[in-house]
Amino acid sequence: LIGDLLANELRFECLECGKCCNSEIIVSYLDIRKLMLDSNLIFKIQRNFIPRLIKGNLVYTTNSILGLSTKRPCAFLKDGKCLVQENKPLICKTYPFSIKPKNMQTTNQIKIIKEEILYKDEIFNLVQIDIKCPGVGKGPIVDLNELFTFCYHEYKNMQETYHF
Ligand code: SF4
Ligand code: SF4
Image (cartoon, rainbow, N blue to C red):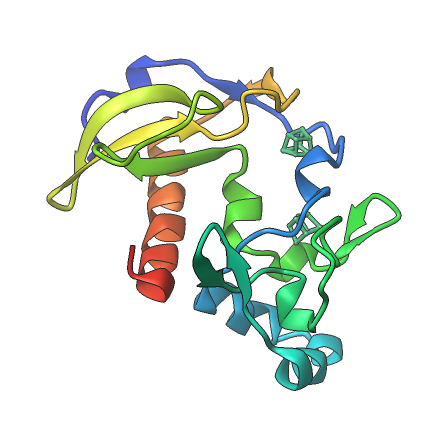
């Protein structure tokens, strides 16, 4: 389906170091709807739902939807564990990987895993968005086709929410 992605070997295992939960993260509308499936959260989110200005854009984050002005750590992190494991945002599930449209500017913090993948008439790079995540290179081999498909789902949800 996605060409020769499987030719590469990538290993990953989350070591639960908690580093990526040390800050709030931006969420899509689908992420918010999923979080609201939790009966403890639905009213909190309905009462407090506000966006946050980040780099000139108004976005919703795991903390802002709870009405919190603090950005660190993610409000769903408790005693080193994620409180919303079942319904956590898609980016938390794909982290530290993501896909970026080929022409989107990226920073030095991003490592390209596979370049120029044509998928549904768009060209993407599969990237590692956190080059310091200690889980990369550990654990089982990642199925790159599955990872890409999952990352694509996350990308589309963000795009539909923020129209970038
Ligand atoms: S930084 Fe990497 S290893 Fe650490 S919790 Fe996040 S995904 Fe897991
Ligand atoms: S929702 Fe859970 S996994 Fe995602 S950043 Fe917050 S605590 Fe971490």
